Image: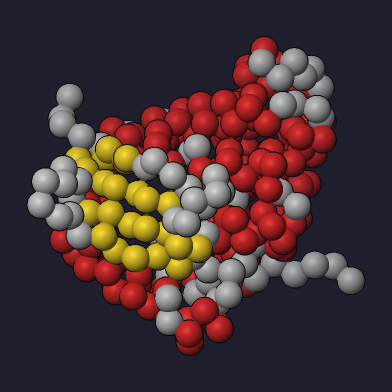
Length: 229
């Protein structure tokens, strides 16, 4: 029987597939020059086929009501790319470099004013209030029973002497859970590496010194605004 894509992801499928095709366009030269791959059309089709599989595996964590749904939709396609390149014998470190530069280029293709507006919204008092609310909810027994594959996190207020505006400590990671379930632990760090450039493109400085994927007790995200150019 064919695997089913959750209706929430099916609703956004065309946009996610378009983003995947854009990434593959941006990655083409790097796939040829760094991964030494020549049959790029075959790889493109293999990645899109693998993405179809990833879509059926993506955990539902509440849809639009949960901010982490966007993280899954924005980043899970890199699992498909990583799987295909791993099967093609590309080293994980090279896969990570290609994906990070591709994601950075994809963000920079968005008009600067739009990117910076997105960053201001993320850093806003209204969004911080939402983050506090959803952080509190993420750890409740009821939420975890309904969405066991979701993230669990705490909102972190700055203390005396801190230079960040706010932080998030992720105590359980949806991508780590996904990787453990589907045999993707080797390529999991590639997902972690995507965060820095994405936030920088939005005018946000991310500081992070440890991750769950690296064996730490939590991922310590700390956010502050980058000075204007």
